[in-house]
Image 1: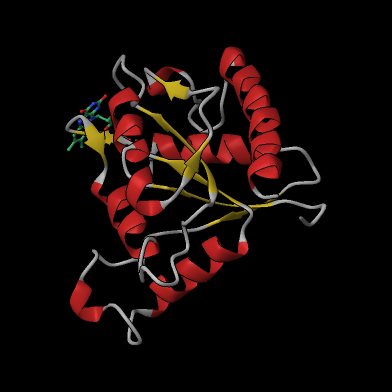
Image 2 (image 1 turned 120 degrees about the vertical axis):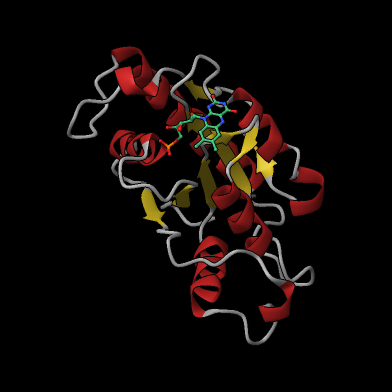
Length: 186
Ligand SMILES: Cc1cc2nc3c(=O)[nH]c(=O)nc-3n(C[C@H](O)[C@H](O)[C@H](O)COP(=O)(O)O)c2cc1C
């Protein structure tokens, strides 16, 4: 495996003031300098539709698949909507999981994390993302779990992470994620 690891990453929220996007920015900031992170903006990825999949799949979908494929690992930062992952997260996973003979996700080391304004820190959404593993082939890091509850108290108005405990958790996350990716990517 190449010395320098590349991680594709996306946040499954489209709103301008997304806490999950803030969390993703904090993850990027906490990364060691020798790691490359390809943050994928998923605004232009349409809802999954099998009718437009295949050779004529939309350009943003082709780019999404290529970028995930080119990465050594994937970081999914998801909101929790109605006790499950957001529709945005789901549609990105759906596109990336196809076509079955050339999927972008199969055997890809992956991490899931998320931020919520309530007290459960996306724990149910994260379980929902992990549940896709038998079909997607994603190899999920188990520990540490980054579950950000009461997100509105952990980022300032500029969207920067202010919570010292979470900063420490992100350092621990990176150590674990890099080790996991090297181990699984052998
Ligand atoms: C449709 C909808 C459903 C939601 N359901 C949940 C939920 O089940 N659990 C939860 O903790 N928060 C829920 N929330 C609140 C989200 O945690 C909050 O909106 C959060 O800011 C979403 O992430 P974002 O800031 O990245 O968009 C819900 C929000 C929306 C809009």
